[in-house]
Image (cartoon, rainbow, N blue to C red; front, side, top):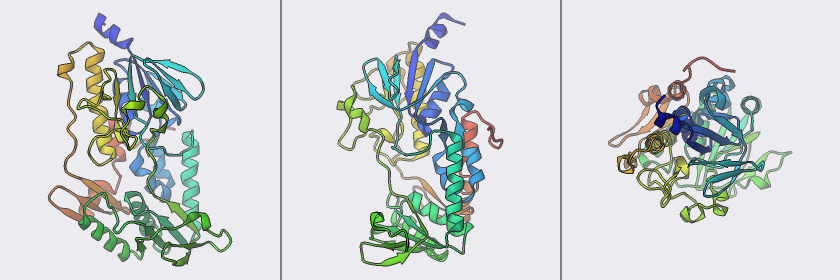
Length: 367
């Protein structure tokens, strides 16, 4: 091995966050540096597959992947990062981990179990909840709420599903055409959609299982699922050396190379960045690949001027699944609904493709 390669392998790279961006970056650089992945959970989960797993728990066997399955040549620290100094990361367990290069990829603050087994059990429990309920309330009409309503409506057509959304239309992150088409599809599947209303979940009566909307409507549901947005996983950064690198929304400000502005050796990728584009998983994967390329260059002593530039996605491309066969898709020039966009995403939800990207068999389950 060349001396330069040996030197690079000794460079300490710390990745905070094992979501869609952090896990791909750690996997990409595990043979190019001394990599430590810090994540409070022991697994990577393909985020857009979770709603299918709620109606088909075995689906999660392929979409919930232990970090050790794809990240075989590095250190996994199962903990939360609580502080960053100029050259170290402090974990909640009190462990100090030194770094030469750092990547922050903490995304959104999702509350999920620590182990893969617990996560799979959680999906089984949610499935049982759906299966045993006659009526189901979904709160939130963004992509998560719409996709969950679609999954339940297709797999359990006898369930009474109500979706309550405080916005004036569904899927507000994309154009009104996609919203209209999705609303029409849900109604065709007997999903009751209530727009411009809120539900106070704190005032729910457990005995009667009755819910009241902000418009005063009262209805029954055997169970509910909260599908509103989760906060960014950046509150902890306010006490670190990166506190002045956060914008007013709590996002890390990055330059065109995905380095935190003003920092030579710290990168940020995924939803936590201030890149002016919609926050989507496939874009987080693109961030990971650009940052990995730039880190490889810097680790091997390459010139900064040769670093790759990340071009934000100017057009909103989105595919929202509607059950197993249909989807609504917004492309730059057209919006379509039905089986054609469904063939692109809904059948396998890109799970096989993502597993392949992580160096795993697209089909085989690794327990």
